[in-house]
Image (cartoon, rainbow, N blue to C red):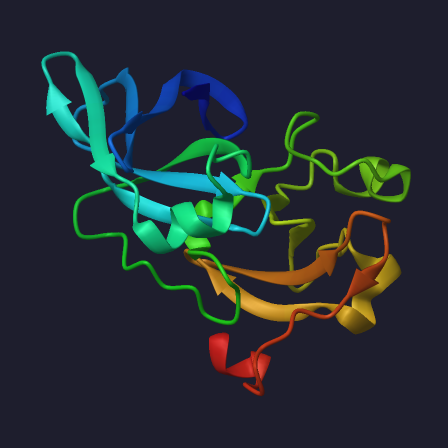
Length: 198
C-alpha cells in the first residue's frame, strides 16, 4: 500500500492511494469537487506518467477508483515503488482532447511555474518568475514553456536556439527540455516539424 498528495498546479488538493487486491493494484484518488469542470488524474512515475481516467462526482467530492493497467504495474515493480505522485488535469467539458503534440504528455498537464513546480535551476529562477511560464516534470526530465510573443521578452532567451514553438491553449510558447543535471536540449519531436504545432 502507498499514498501521496493529489496536486493541481503544484498545490495539494486531495489524496491518492494504491493497494494490492489479490494480484492486482487498485488506485484511488479523492478531492473536493469543482462544479462545471472535469478532473482527470495523471499518475506520475519515474518513467513519465499515465492519465488514469476522469474523476466522478461523489457528493461534494470527486473520486476515481481504478485498477492499474498490468503493463504499468509490471514496469513499476511489485511494490509500485516507481510512483512519484499524482496530479489533476482540469478542463471544461469537451475542452480536453488528450493531445500531446510533440510532447510525451498531454499539453493540459503543464502547470504554472512556481517555486514548488520549478526545477532546481538558478539560471531560470529569475528569468521565468512572473513570466507566466509553464512546467511539467516527466520522468527524469523537466519540460519548460515560456510565452513566445511579439514585443515581449522571451524568458528562455538563454536557450532560444533549442526552443520548440508550440501552441498551448490559445498562446504560443517556446518549449525546452532540461534533464536532472540541468542540461538543456531540444524536445524530440519524433521527426515532426515543430512549426506544425503553431
